[in-house]
Length: 297
Image (cartoon, rainbow, N blue to C red):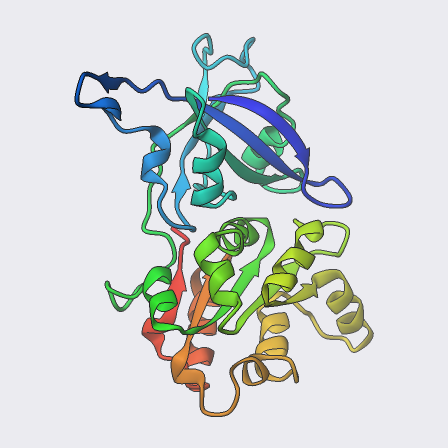
């Protein structure tokens, strides 16, 4: 897989979008009665819903080459990376090519793998796995997913924390079924970022809002400054608690009175106890636990 483009995804340039090209030569059947029928699956065919992910391997920093075929030391990234382009975008952009085009989101201030990937330029090679995962899905009900929530007309609340959190949420908000849903049902986004300059996809927020989504950014730097003045420590968990459960524009304002049972909450970027804490709080406010969906792994 080759890096086609490395472009800014945030105002300060710390968050990067990697446009990747996966070589994907597909044979077609040609005949008198059957013409130009795809004989085998393309790489992109496994990408069906937002929230799916890939594993990544790249040449170690001690290697003399960035070409994975000539690399003496392949490093497997510690975390799986969500695809940041929507399934429809990826198929559209790849339709007439012998390659699949997809986007990953990485940060220059992330872990060692992300910092390395964030500096790769056009022509650099990395390896990615097949697309994996079920997308946003419930841990408690195998039949509950983003698709089933759209079909049921549920209000959607998307909670994204950090760069890892916003990548699959952006894929969802760029996906045609979600955009159509936002025109007839409520869609709200709560996005925790370090600061406005480091927030990803800032230029796309107006597009999401025009489609009908309510976008609420929550900045850790501003909360930390306010907390320091009061002698309190503020992290993503405290910021989400305040925004979702105590703010006027929080969950009650988005859902309306007595509507929590009809809501679906998509969560990305929260791990372990923080994710469990949010699930418990949502249940206390009437959101069924099977309607809280994750794509983290």
